[in-house]
Length: 184
Image 1 (cartoon, rainbow, N blue to C red):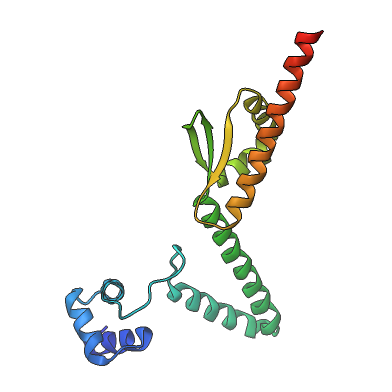
Image 2 (image 1 turned 90 degrees about the vertical axis):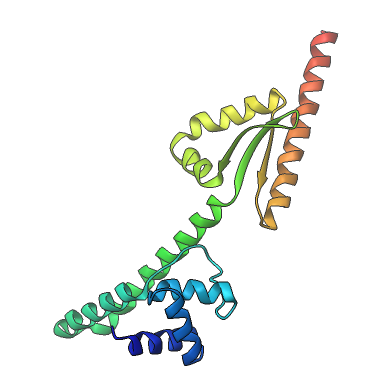
């Protein structure tokens, strides 16, 4: 692409002036992606709120080929609508996986962390090995292991409160069992 076209494209995409776009491209050796990063660092462009990045070129080309193929079939509207619905589901699943990868399940004893793994791993283990994970959790509670969730989400405090109550109830049951054995 010619320099002028690159500057125009960056100017339009980033919603900045022609001069700012030209300076950003010159600073980034005429690489448009590096120019976006440069503009983000300078505060001219807002950084994305999600840590998943996409390029629109493939999506546009993919949609254009679908439109061409579907016009030949005569049912353009139905197929592109179905494709967009699938694309929306995929994006939502990716966001959920990203959120779960940033929340950690911690196993502690006496304030020492023994294991810290993403919640995604716990979910996969519960799906494929629930017969081992659930009994290990229960046994861990009886051996005074503490389970908690850590991350930057509001819901985590509620989950930790529930996990703490479960732990306290198991300690009460354990105490009653010990007293029962001593009295019997």
